[in-house]
Length: 179
Image (cartoon, rainbow, N blue to C red; front, top):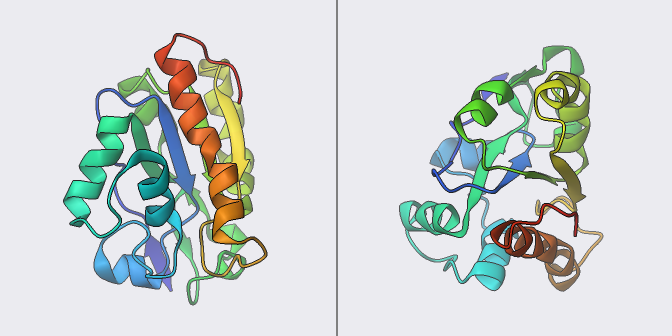
């Protein structure tokens, strides 16, 4: 079945971008990023940035924007049965328009990938064009927050995701060094 991602969540002060691959069925049904109740994304954001995971969705998005975090997906469209990244038909992958995003949000200096599929699709479809125009971006893959990625505990995932807070602190002090 054809699935489409959501519009980006991006405030004027965005300094980091977190990219998923494509929302899962629960997220698509809810019209919300990371809506599956066992996805660790919102609990990790609560732990790192005091954005309550139980808050209304609009309040959580406002918290991300206030923290300087933008949220989107590498893919804008693809064919996939179910929710697993492994089920995405490779020939159907259509990336989102990252040149538009970075032209309109030039303060973003660091991209974090929420899992391997987000990163591999980005490298395949986007990196060459984006790097030509924005050569100083920093890229970091983080472990997926998906409940399907159960090889790490919540605490282990959270430790890796601490890199987002470090990057935001570094960008606030004027440094774009990788954590």
